[in-house]
Each structure stands twice: as structure tokens, then as C-alpha cells.
Length: 164
Image 1 (spheres, rainbow, N blue to C red):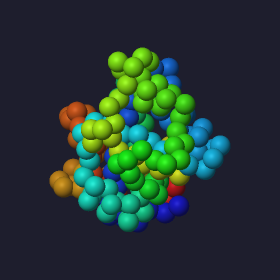
Image 2: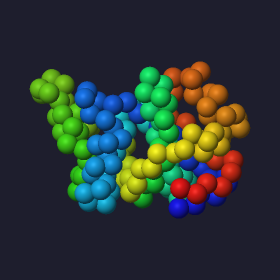
Image 3: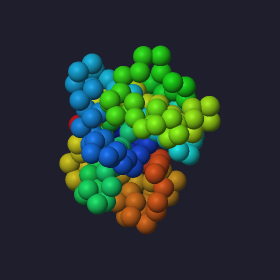
């Protein structure tokens, strides 16, 4: 897979859930059925920007917490939804997130605080490749900016052609 220089990409910082590895659990579903739905909970990301990114190839960078090495993965997504997918194929631990350990902890899906991405692949990026990302608005290096902000979502682009 090749990503042209200047391609718009969305970056998500992810957190593992309990004893579950976010990356391993999502990759496992992709290996079994060919795709996985990833749930983003929290502040709503721009549908317009997500649509633009999808039309540019649907590239997403998933960044691990600094405490876990700040490793970057590149993923491709083919669909995006703000409603519960008809055929939900996701890691098993989502059941606990969606329904809660008990009814008091269940997520209220009537509020627009969730977005779904249908991921078709997740590949670990070589550290040198991840140095080619800049913040779309400012042109500043993602590696320089990411440790100075708490934002979970960034709109970025790559400055060099990438072959995955």
C-alpha cells in the first residue's frame, strides 16, 4: 500500500481497556473476518474532515500512550458511522463497554458522543515513518506536538510518500 505525500490522515490516541490490548484485540477480529468496527467515544470529531480523509484513502494513525512507548500504527478505514453498525463486528470487550459491568455503567447511546470506524487493516509503523507526520493546520511535527497536548484526535498529513 502506498500513501501519497500530503495525504490527509486522522490520528487517534488510544487507550487499552483493562487487561485488553486495543491493537491486538482489533487485529484479531480483522484476521478472523476481514474488518473490525472501532468505537471512538468522547468529543465528536468533524464529519466533514472524516469524510475528506475517507475520500483520500481512509488513513488513520493509532498512537499508543507514551507510557507504552508512543508506538504508531497505520490503519485504513472504509466506512464511518455515527449510528450503531447493523452488523457489529468488534472486540469482545466492547460488550462490557457498551453494556457496562452493570446497568449503571452502560453507555447512553442516545447522546452523539460516539463514532464508529470500519477498519480493514492495522500495521505497525516503523519509527522513521512516523517522523513524517505533521499537523495539517500548523505544519509542526506530530512527534514534537503530541507530548505537549492532551487532545485525543489530530488531523495530520504525511510529508513524504509512504509505502506500507
